[in-house]
Amino acid sequence: MKLVGELNKKLIDKPYIHRIELLDRFYKLLDNNELVFVNPDKWEDPLENLIFNSRLIKNGKPFQNPAKERIFSQCWSYEGDSYGIWKIYTTKADDNGEVKRHMGVRITTKLDKLITISKNNPGEFYYGLMDYKWKHEIDKLPKDPRIIDSVKDTIPNVKHIETLLFKRKSYAYENEVRLFSIPDSSLIDSVDKKLCRLKINPLELITSIRFDPGMDYNEFKTHKLKLENDYGFRPSQITQSTYFKKNKYIIRID
View 1 (cartoon, helix red, strand yellow):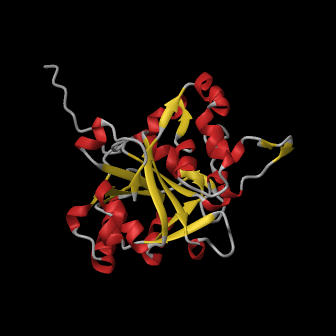
View 2 (tube, one colour; view 1 turned 180 degrees about the vertical axis):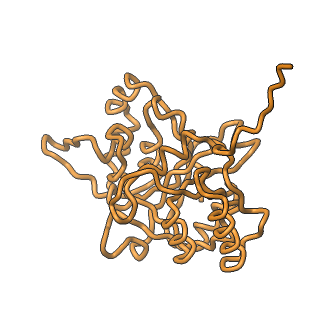
View 3 (cartoon, rainbow, N blue to C red; view 1 turned 90 degrees about the vertical axis):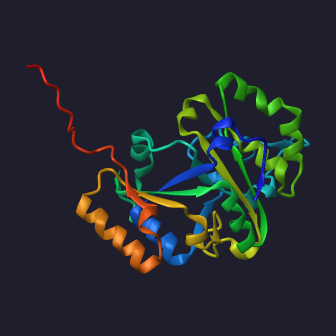
């Protein structure tokens, strides 16, 4: 997996990235040995994918760039254990369509382990840090010669990837790292063409697992034993976020 752009000092010093999955999707990841990337057309922010959401005009006529159908992505973060991130990324629709705050699991990997994704799957694979820009800066991008040049190209390549690494400043708290795939057609879901299923070895890719701070401790222990006994993770790899631990501080005023 190739780096697009440069790493910042924080990632150079501590090259770990994290992703929060809903509990049921986490076990699907383990059982199916796969990461599911989505086409950027499914992203919620309409300003973060210029070549997908902009109205393209070529020779005076509307134009659909076929390259956009062949690029898939997954969002990770180098932000540490953050209650805000837990809450945002676990409040969504589950596989049954129910929108609420669900229990989640944070998986962590090291940047040098991303190469296992490209080793296990045919295609081109990239990753890069998000460049958070003010709205007035994003407004100028459709006239940027580099953007225009990338949109002219109908074969998906790294120039398209670069256009997908811009996002509004209001999202800067995410500290996002995006993984990208231009996969072999065999990896695109046969039913939902907006999904790409990449094979992984979870024990090779995942360095640690952290469970939701809102999970009952006994439930956490059950999941921990399951991960150890059924999936082969080491006990030291499995923890629970402490954000909801009771306040045990003592203030003496005598």
